[in-house]
Structures are given as C-alpha cells and as structure tokens.
Image (cartoon, one colour):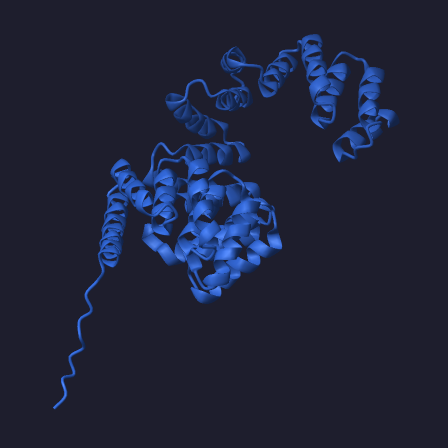
Length: 379
C-alpha cells in the first residue's frame, strides 16, 4: 500500500526569508488599513512606509498612503501615491477610485471623469462610481451625458437617492425647475419622514424660481422645523414673503439671519428693502448705510436713491442712479427710475433722452419701450 503523503519540501534560507517578509507585509497592510478605519492616520502611515522599505512599489502601501493623505485633505500628495501605484498596477480599482476623488476635491472634474471612466472599464455596474461620474459631468455642464448616467443608475436601483438628487440639481442648474421638482418630490416619497433638509430647501428654491411662493413657504417651513437657524431656509422664507409683497413677514426672517450674521451686507440691504416697502424710510436708510459701512453695495445705493425719490429729493436720487449706471449700463430699471425723477421735476425731454440712450444699446425692454412711447405721444 503506497504512502499518499507528499514529501514536505524544506525551504531554503532565502525562501524562508521571502515568506517571512511577505507575511510581515501582509500583517502591516492589514494593520495599516485597520488604523485608517479608526482614523489613526499617522500610525497607519508608519505601517505603510515600513512596507515600502521592504517593497518599494507595493500597491497596498501606495494606495494606503494615498488614502491617508486624502483623509488629511492633502489631495495633491495623495495623487502622487495613486499615480505611482497605477504606473505599475494600471487596473488597481482602489487607486483609480482615490485618484478620481482627489481630482473631484480639487474641482478638476474633467480629470476625475477620465479616471472614473477607466474604473468603469473594470467595474461597469458600480452604482457609487456611476453617480460620481454623473455628478462630474454635471459640474462640467454636460447635460446629456450626466442625465444619461443618472438614468442608468435608476434603471439599476429605482430609487437611488444620489441619482434622484443629482437629477434634481442637473435640471435646476439648467433652469428646468419643473423637472427638478419631479425628482426631488420623488425623494420625499422615498425618504418620507427621514428626508434630508437639503432636499426640502431645494424644493423650496424651485418654487421660489417658479414664483409659486406659497408652495415654497411650505418646504422652507418644514426645513426650519428640522433646523430653526438654517440659513438657506431662513433666506427662502424671507424671499418668498418678499415675492408675495408681505414685507413685514419677510423682515422677520431677514432679522433672524442678521442675529447670527450681523455683517451680512446682502441681508442688510434686503432688510432695508423691507423697511422701505413698509414706508419706514429712516429705518431703511439705517440698514442701507450699515451695508455700505461694510463695503460698496449697488443695491444699498439703489435703495438710498429710491428713498430720496420717495422723499421728493429727485436731484439727489438722479445723481445716485447716474453713478450706478457707470457700472451697470444695461440695467433697464436705472433708466426708468431716472426718467421718473426727471418727469417729477417737469423735465420731460430729459426723461425721453435717458430712455432713448437705453434703446441705443440695442436691448429690447417692454417697460422702457412703453414708457418712451407714452412720453413721445404726450399721453
């Protein structure tokens, strides 16, 4: 009866040393990645560098060092490690993924797309990568390709939240607000009570752009139930009330933002506008001047000019509006406001002259044309 046991081959000293080295590399690699998971980045780096001392082109160590640098937001350093790995291991998915994410973080979206497309050659059904590619195409404003990939993800996962949110942003970026609403409303159905506040503010912003302000108030209100001091929700509420000419309610939300950010000149001018519409010119002037004390603001200057106009100080209003025209010569409202002031001063020809100067720019504006026709016909 023959003995089936194979003879155990004894390793040479060189082979034994190689095996011990490989075992040590394996243990260091496992430990390094575990340390990364625990966010003990410096300790992980020590492990990966020890591997490179034994194997200067080890793909696990190079990717690990890339991941460590990426966690520290040192994306350019991370890129070097990933590229060194890919030079010897061109199909390493972890290096491709990390490299693409670094380019994305550096806003180099075209480079990120190139790398993610390479990744998809090895793993074409990776939903996470597909949504990232679609996001990158959205950033470079390639509407068709971005939408195509998002829809591919939805074919694979019907309610994938990243694809739904991405499609919403894609259509919003291209001013297709009705379509954006469709995808973000789908997110509400999917998440129900656990919806992200950014979806709520995005829905509110769609309605704000569509001028369906009452519906916008609903979504911004829901967002504020989650985060009472959320800037975007407070801004949305204020702007919707402003669109509805409910300036007292609008002012309440501008003031809530200013409690947290008293030197926000945009909000100061908006609050000034609310006071002006409410007829409180002294308070409006105070807010406009507070904005101007921070830095020049065209809207604050316009607000002060309109206060002067309302108070009957037409010459002062004209001077301010003429000053604004130098930096914004295509703003039709400045021309009509100046024309109004000239009319109040009985200077009809000057009113016609300023409106005519706007038309010479080759810009069509119905309000300017109607006002000019009325003046020329003497009505």
